Image (cartoon, rainbow, N blue to C red):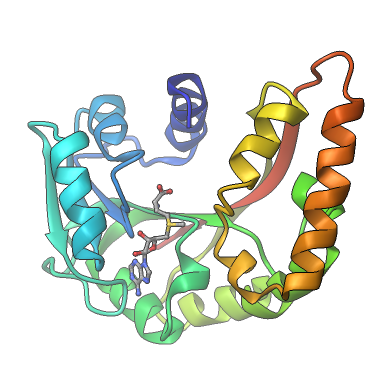
Length: 232
Ligand SMILES: C[S@@+](CC[C@H](N)C(=O)[O-])C[C@H]1O[C@@H](n2cnc3c(N)ncnc32)[C@H](O)[C@@H]1O
């Protein structure tokens, strides 16, 4: 993700954050794409909690920041005390979580009263048409099955007194051209690719390569996603 794209996300997060955001939890922080930027944006102490040792080690090396602490842990069992976080971010994480009701309980536990949970993802039943879905329609069907629905997520949190504050459709530029987008797709960056069979994969890439070859003027590729904001 480019620094400009990270900055655009920070301005979205800033709009939904509590006025006083002293502690942020980047839950499922991966290689720390957002973690230092969160510390800079909010001047906050940021915990990057990530279950994968390999990803956490990469974050510690490449996304270090004096106000960031990376910790092993997962959404179902967050290694932080109750009422310790003003803002919790789950960026493309919730659909990976195996035990989502336990995660909702533990996120609610660490949230301060008046705190906010930002869930960037997609929800079954209101899945946007992503650019790569055009080439891999089976991928979209698979994601409809893998991603939780919005009512499911809202119910999971509501039992802990954490309720819907806002739901925003965010549009973002993901590549400057179809050729650049294809370059990234060839690395099969989405875990959904693991669920596609060889035939669907080959057909998708053949159609994509044909469109790349036909691209005369580079046209930016944009996609939409949901940002769900919850609060106590
Ligand atoms: C698509 S990556 C997103 C990483 C990061 N949020 C970002 O946007 O760069 C999904 C992350 O969720 C993590 N993850 C998987 N299961 C998890 C769980 N139960 N609790 C917290 N994180 C989890 C993965 O290890 C991975 O780092």
